[in-house]
Length: 164
Image (tube, rainbow, N blue to C red; front, top):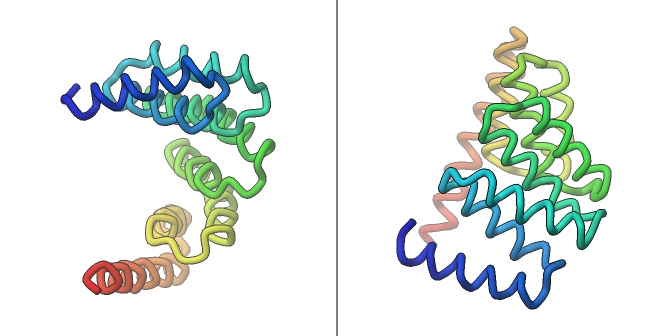
């Protein structure tokens, strides 16, 4: 862990000591632990958040990310699904459900999940690329090409916006 991450961990731990129900701090801290391959610490943070707030969509989303990082895609889908039950507009959760379904070769389900994410996010390059992958796997070449084209356009538009 680098110095910046160590500082962030200390700050997030302080926030959680003062506000144990703080979803943002718990989620961010668990994400650092997941990235640093410390799953037990990530799970502990998210489990504490669920004790404080059983209806925390972010706690379930974080548990989904933890499961996905451990290649347990069905558990990831289950946790992401709990997140969208609690927050039906949780775009990232639909996207990640779709990615996990792709890994499990459940292409029809992946397309449905990614299309939900697409409707909520409105123009997102990553969603378009994931849809292209799902369409390709299903042999839907026309749809795959359209999604790739849209992703390319979005990437170009985002680069133009960044350079301005």
